Image 1: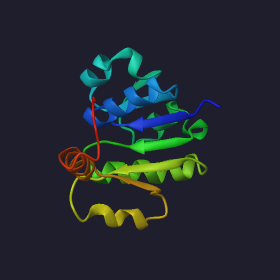
Image 2: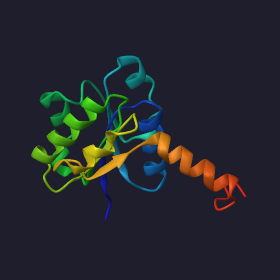
Image 3: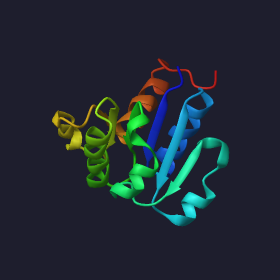
Image 4: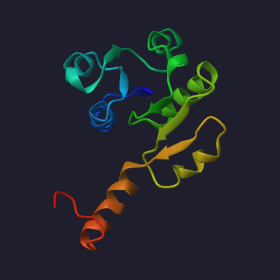
Length: 141
């Protein structure tokens, strides 16, 4: 079964996430607010790129969120990501939601009803680095 993924935020985290998911056979739609980033988004990284504010109803509806299995707010603004998750819960109640946070202490947002998973790039990078240093993770070996 092909899983439909909606990512709001086409920056570094969103772009890398879209690339890995597309490579794994997922159907990915990205919403990016910055017109230049949206236009320059590498074509094979997502099935569709929509330019606009993913917190605006008319923009997110263009992405057909009701067909999404996963909706991920991956912008560098926590408030935006929380709104994306809340919209997703309303428009696609069965979709899993992922909310990127940017600072220590924001992990508490995981208790919100519309947030299923927290994404914290700094903590993930620290875990990866520790794994490499302690030789528990062998990247590229």
